[in-house]
Length: 98
Image (cartoon, rainbow, N blue to C red; front, top):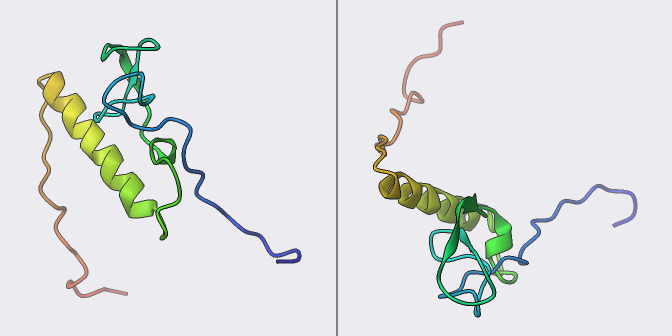
């Protein structure tokens, strides 16, 4: 690659598991509290590429985004919070005034 800049999506390090013996975070991206069991640290989440255990063979941007959004939906439900999940109106069809 010579002197050309390159970027990477670091993956792994905090894999998902059913409990602490098989992963670092649960399906909600909450960090397990100990070396075994399903208890989690309150308010501690990992919502990035670290929860993906290895390369997925394509750009992981959308996978990381989907996992992070899913974690936030669970966080909101667990805390009885609400937010609007409707898509933002597309303004691309509006005429641009210059």
